[in-house]
Image 1 (cartoon, rainbow over the protein chains, first blue to last red):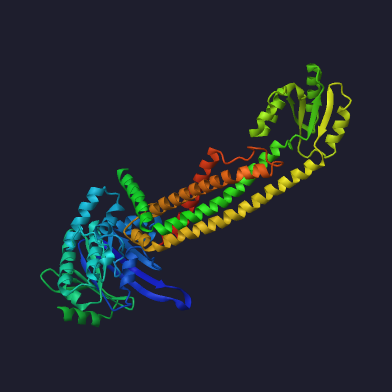
Image 2: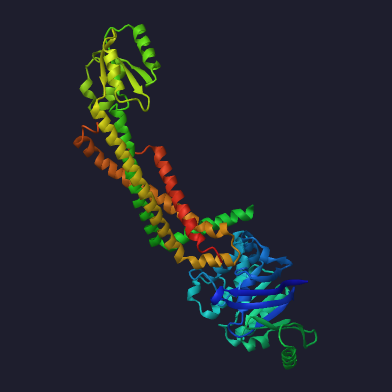
Length: 253
Length: 300
């Protein structure tokens, strides 16, 4: 069953002469427990696509369904409840700079109305998963970029969301940590979470034990291929020219 | 329900922590609120005391019918009924010599001992007439002429032209107070709103983060509203303290220097009820200011 579906989604920033198309008729679907890598150069529309899933932006046309629900029809008051089911790791981390790691991770649980002891226990567990000591009292602004990145990942995982969005989550990490984070994301998907990771780094695409590969270019989904059990890939949906899809699949296989 | 209680606990704790993180901003907001509320308070005090002067001078009683010493009670009652039946007369109140003495005593305030040993009967009994609104200005004098021949009437006191002038002056002062109060209120709202907005602006990233991790509007807004409420309450309380200190310092000076206008003890500070309402108003201004300021950054 599809957890995330895009159906002919078009998104344009601005209007008139200043209009800039970010996505054009993008369609794909991701099953529960999928681990999808969304690739493409800068400006391809990756971040926009993630923002649409979080309802930070609204598409001009098309339908986006999260767990079968059309999020375009959500009232503003319902958006927080969507976001509690969609964890997100942002390029700029979006952490409370004056708060310590535990407090940052706890935020995602406090919005759920959890009791303090449970919040601390779950937040500490999430931090341990990304190798950050839950007892550190240092403010996040005193941590390195890589450490901040991991705190952001821990916060996104803490609420055990149905979908986990990650916008360049390994951008500030060394290769060892990058691999560990990718393994962590792969493990997360085995718990039933659908992971959508946006990256422009070819290494990440190679290292990720992904089930789905999506490639955006100029706002158009050029290809969507799915890993086959026992190796290999098969195309699923594409807006690109057939020859290019075949070329890409052959190159990967 | 329990989840909501924990969320409420978080809101209060986060609000308190937010205040502790930026004490200077909080002090600035509270001081701004205190200054603005003090200005409003001064205007309100002027209003209340001008109203008091109007009453203590008896401006609201333009016709006083003084009765002869041995006036027959029945004749006085008939006269009162006849007067009350006039369309121009709104109310008639009988004032006995004892009541008159009591009023005089109250009017003297701390100087009441001047009346020690004086018998209340030296003051005449009277009927005080309150006239209906829009009564023609020539009516009191015409009524006085008619009553002068009555067997129970000793004298008719009619508030003269100077009373009209005083009344007109007091009305003007009150209108000015209303105008100034409105202007100061608007300025206060703008200043307080901007001060709170500065504090919120410094923490706009926090608002966005809370929205992105699934915080509802109420959850995100909560800590800021707690802050605004505390700022407003403390600001109003500080203003009341300032005003009380200033009032106590100035009142004796005004009462002795302007004794013609202010009898001793005539100047009044806010009652406990008005003071409590003022603190509540401060809290409301703080809440409204923070709500408006946060709303700007809620759309994520």
